[in-house]
Length: 164
Ligand code: MN
Image (cartoon, rainbow, N blue to C red; front, side):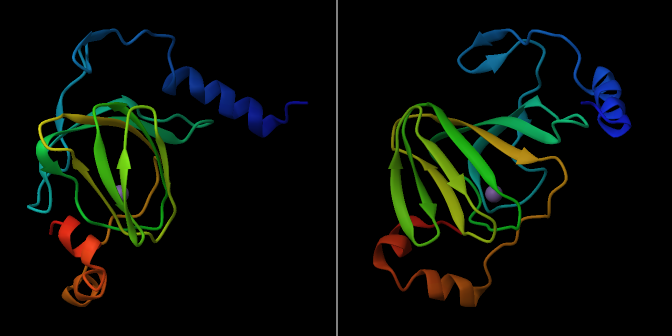
C-alpha cells in the first residue's frame, strides 16, 4: 500500500523521469545527447568520453552513463565510497579491480564495491565502451598517494597495468 511518502516520490518523478525515447544515432552515440569529457579536468585519464543516459529522479536516485575508451586510453586509477555497476557494451578491455587485473568482453558485468581501487583500459586497437550505474549523490573519487602506488606496485601484474 502506498504511503504519503511514496506518493510524493512518484509525483516528483513526473518531473525527473519523463516518457521519452533516446534514439541511438550511430556507433554508441545518441541523438541530441552531448558527448562529454570523462571528467572536467585532470591528467589521470586518457582518450575517454562520457554520455549521460539517465540522470536520476527521486525514486531512482542513480545515474546511468556510457563511457567509451579509445584504443590506448584508460580511466583514472581511483577509489571512493560509492559503488559502480558496469556492463560492457562495446569491444574489449581490462579492469584493475582491488588487487587483480581481469580481461573483459561484451556483456560482462563488473561490480566495484566502495573503497576498491579500480582502473579501466581499452585493449590495444579496439574501442572499449561500457555502461556505468552510480548513485546521483556520491563522494568524490580519491587518487592514490605515492605510498598507495608503491603498495599497489608490489604485485608485478598490477605494476605493469596501472597508469597514473
Ligand atoms: Mn570510479
